[in-house]
Amino acid sequence: MSEAVEAVNFAFELGWKLRGLETALACGAWRRGGMGLSVRVQSDEGGGAWTAVGDDGDRREARTAGTADEATSLVQEAFGLTAWRPKPPPPPGWHRFTLIHCPVGESPSYERIEARPPQGCVVEYVGGYFGLRCERPGARLLDAVAETCREVRTEHGLLMSDLGIEKLWEWSQDGTDGWGAEIVGQLLLMAAERGPKLGYEVDDLVRFLRTAAG
Image (tube, rainbow, N blue to C red; front, side, top):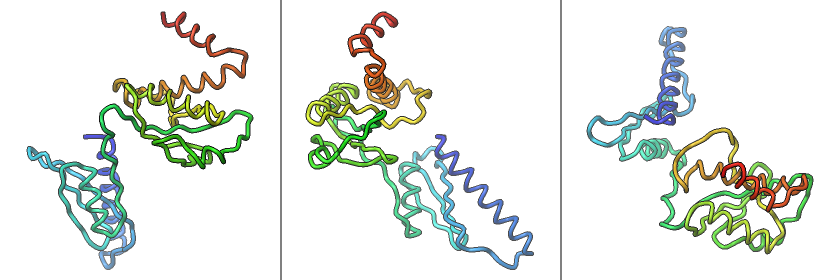
């Protein structure tokens, strides 16, 4: 079972235990409404389906779907909430990623790129920083990222330095197009931005990698 599903189950059990405590303290005379929605998701053994049960303190709703996320979304909608659904994967040869400009000691203007972002990208500020959410072609993820960065740097003079990774020390060995590749890409972009500020040229960084890694 995934960490997300385990977390949902833990939240559901905690909610029910708190409700049981309230009932005991109040001698079963009342149930507090408006506690918020708790959703429990469970796999149907052997059937390949998932059933989600939601409870908001006043009523229960159950929905079954092919994935835990979809079952949860259906329950949320049954309670009148807006459900989040992940986008379908991009077509072969295309990649989704977020580029963020986190300047060190600079205050650039973004008016030009806001008016004309790269094709396949939309402007979105992330944590107060200028960002681009992109779906772009490339043989591999880093190829798509590099070409987008080149276009932004050439046309707008901005060196994008962040791929939205917060925990750079984490790792996932999930191939050339996964989360691990995004972590590697962000580390390389950070080096490309900060190295020249210390006197290292891009060629110096390339030589460092070749010498250190062989």
